[in-house]
Image 1: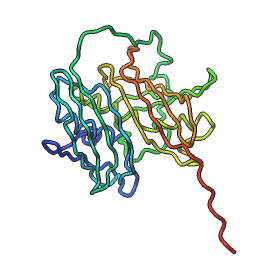
Image 2: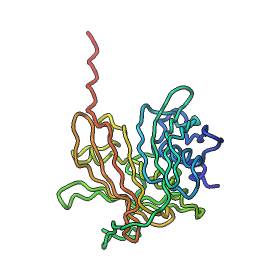
Image 3: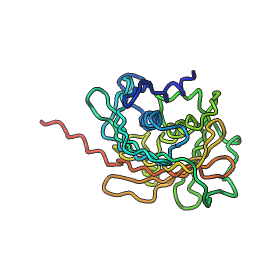
Image 4: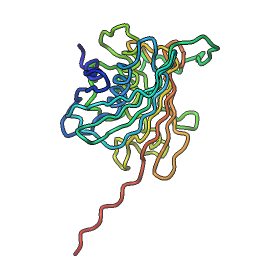
Length: 272
């Protein structure tokens, strides 16, 4: 099994699951792993015909990247075509995140959400990696290329990504990978609007709330575009909206994140 697939797997039974640590020990756990493992734990309790349709997750406190994470699943609802789960992630007795996740079987209905033209060919871009350090991610298994664009008068980040290892055809696996990859530095555009960045550490920053709506099938081993912008920020928090677009122009998911982007308090001068 690849490192990436191992990080997204959870083991257990019934309503108690465990996700493996990502490392390195003593570092803050990567939020995308908490998102993906929460989704994986919930999906283990739902029949395969019902795929995720939306997920809303709150980050309560940071976790230790070097420690396993336990997931407790509450079966809120099971219907004929839909299901709902609540998931709490813990290390010891410390809750890290809480999530609500909805699942549904596919139904017939009108469809829209396709781009006629994509902004660029990802193959022509430099292989940049993420917008900052990502020690918990297996970057040798991911091709990430980032373009920051201000030509239209606003800051727009386009993050192209694909997985470089062989993947099973299971649609849930591809959805889990998308949930994992697209969280990386997603709140950063809220700082970039003002000429700052999470990487520079000029501000206290980190995701507080993450929501995603899954519209259609995703192939993680093909090029996907995550296009992000920040419509508003105030009170030390910013919001970022993003579309996950497949290489054929179909919008496969919509994401919204709120995050902390507060100014750091000045270090007090030593008393004389």
